[in-house]
Image 1: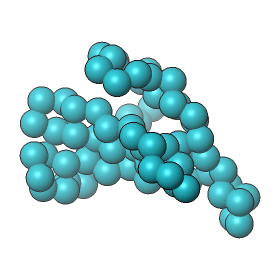
Image 2 (image 1 turned 180 degrees about the vertical axis):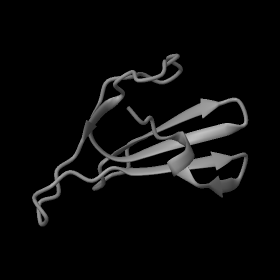
Image 3 (image 1 turned 90 degrees about the horizontal axis):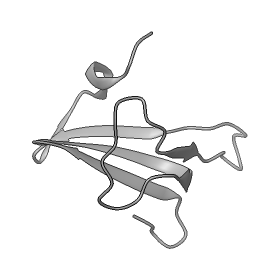
Length: 75
């Protein structure tokens, strides 16, 4: 999804769950494409004021926002 004046957003549906990745500079996946675990979906935009990259990551189960920490891959 592209919102004029904002960085790019990717929504990925996983059954009843939707993961949302906001503040992307580039997107490497296409609408309707199946993605796999650990697949790169894009690059995070760099903040002009803070000089660092910050990804806004959210998870929803149907319409309920849930804790994304349970979904983050840990090495």
